[in-house]
Image (cartoon, rainbow, N blue to C red; front, side, top):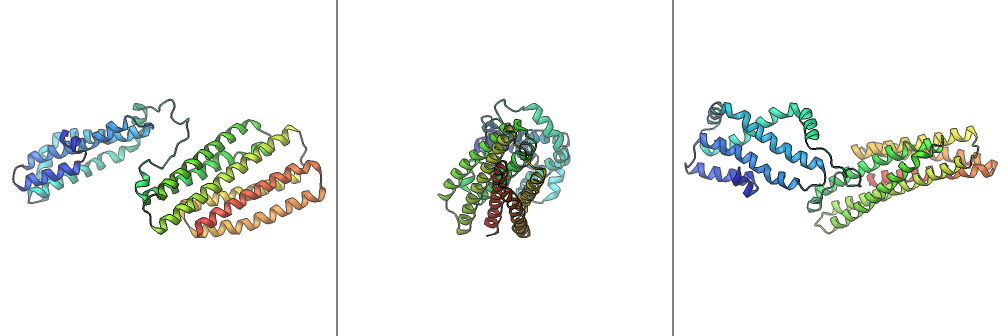
Length: 349
């Protein structure tokens, strides 16, 4: 365990064991405790480094890794002689038995702990509570600091981050916007503004991330993919900005107690449903990558254009001063629909 921790690699210690067994310097009875020690020692570096991690989840994962292996060693101890016979039966030569001992003990851990995964995760959350300041500051959810070293991994993480950000905009902005526009619930304006600031922060951090990624040795396809993601996060930021403008405009309309005709509200609601439904389809597209969904988004936007034209023509014909606010709201909704289509086309290309 100590030697593996010093080497910072259980694979390196396993190679030493195989070399020693090749020269007949080990027996199968001595191999198994050494292999179990290597399993535990390989987790210690990660455990110690996680103590300075910002997120409690990082500490929990590292602790789980160590505890699983310690528990497996303790559970295996009473059955040591049976496990030794099994390893002897699995292969004729000692070097192969060393490798099998490492493999089968790892498989044993999966069999033992996978069914208990949910219980153990709840126990770890209680054992290692979330820090007081965690969750208050914006942070990248999927992207790690080491990601730019491996462009393929970095791009996969970036796609997950973009999907998370789009979902954040849907849940914390798009879905609650009607409460302030149609019902005058100005209390949620702060929540919308807080989410918009978080979206801005993510946009800036992701831009820095892609700038760093461009300095790496990437293939042509990876460069194109990275550029596409940059365009998408900019479009998402535009959507968040548009939603905030709408929310503030809705708050002003209700503060001024401007009466809006019921038919205008219904039409605006119809436009909102069409745009938000298309945004939901975009999220499904980001998740699945199904090109058929891109076509659905583009086709649905034609309906959005028709609804928008009907609403604006109806309002323009009356040319009432009180209708100007509704005209502007509908225009911003239409702009959000345009941004959604642009994202779909970027992904489609």
